[in-house]
Image (cartoon, rainbow, N blue to C red; front, side):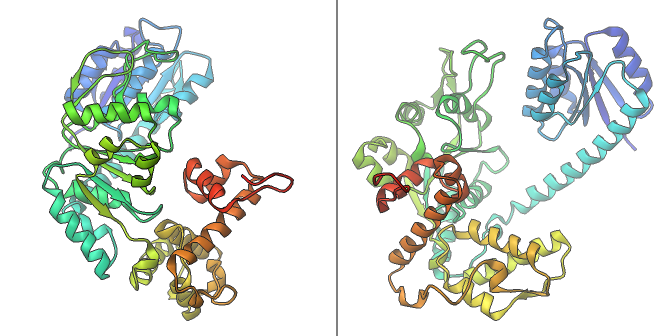
Length: 457
């Protein structure tokens, strides 16, 4: 049986040698004295676990070099288990390393027996995650299986996905929040010639404007305060693969210009840099906004819209998918009941009626949240409409023959509930609703909501 691989990154030779001799019986050990050596060995050997000294030369008195090394190792293999070993008494640096993806940390001098136990456990977790990753890769061979639905309208979506997957052009996916736009993007990638390359996703509406440019295009060391190391952006990380730009409608105009320039010449420049970096990547974008209206108002560049929407796939809301909703609900219930260990057999008939009648403004995401809550709260073998937080009484959905009016009624109700719950904190209310802050502002203006004691917004 082959030994698991271990990389020791430590600038003090005596400690490196000590760790090697203590661990060589159980691991194939490699050693590095600095960041450059560590990256060279890591890229060649791809070890299962790494012990990393945060205080590496030439910044022994700080954690900058060690944290930079951690980021670079995880960018090569996100599953690697990095054990931080530091002589720095500032516990906050070790905790920061954990928040950046390190597996565990130890203070010098290291207790070898404790380290052995931790390394053994880390290797076990690594192997489990690798096996899961392998199974997920195999599942990509039937990527559309992850999207549940047999309705005519979804068959049209599946047909569009199959047609566009092998044609290397930009795709714009539109649809309400929670309809599964990223699942469709994943399916396109998995069916494409780029399926063995990275699929990189970024939500343009979830990252502060001041950080988004660096996230997308990367930055050079020293480009701004806090830029202690060179960082590759999402474009570079997706090289040869697919970049999924979710909520593209939230992209600010200056970044729309940079994205348009990339689509024209396929080069990027990192923040603080002046070198053109050629990138081969397929762009798939998604939005829940009416992007054509945004181009008319000037919020979104018309030329960028046409560049992104060479092919446009519209994902229908859940309320338009007929009996797909029951099929999806049953699949979610089976999965979460198994995960939680609860013996739940299905839904009561009234619960099924309520699921069919409800307009689901949050679509599949909302359905999933309600079913998970119902599983947690339920005490019987069947989920009730009460456990779901739905009822066949009260609002008369059968009279709402106009689906747009039905959606507006629920949209108004949910937005007001979230605003009241959060004391009209727009950021928190938007988070409650799983929408962007800009979308919430639009809803508030649309219905003329006002807080008690205020004029209408």
